[in-house]
Image (cartoon, rainbow, N blue to C red; front, side, top):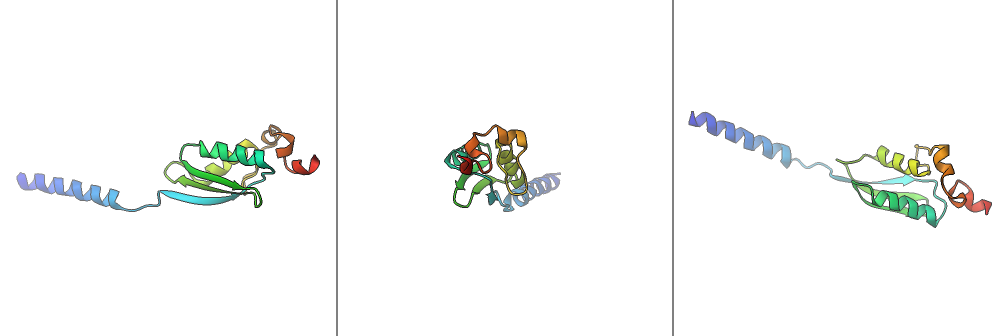
Length: 117
């Protein structure tokens, strides 16, 4: 009986060591092309992403309109992050913002808005 108990305990320990000992990518950084126009766009996108649970860091380069986002892979995926950006009113790679979300943005932040002023 003792041998069986020791064997069961050993198997439990070994299984937990195997499962929890495997290294998996816990974070990932992606680059997303956006339709941002100005500094307000930058603040809006970075503000939303940096306060989203699971995102560790987000920064938008206005010259290239690319957002660099570091996130926890257990909480989010790249497509979800793109949908968050699109819901704010900006295109995010292949995920296009809905017209009603774009129209909620200030005129300068809408596509081509900086050229209309």
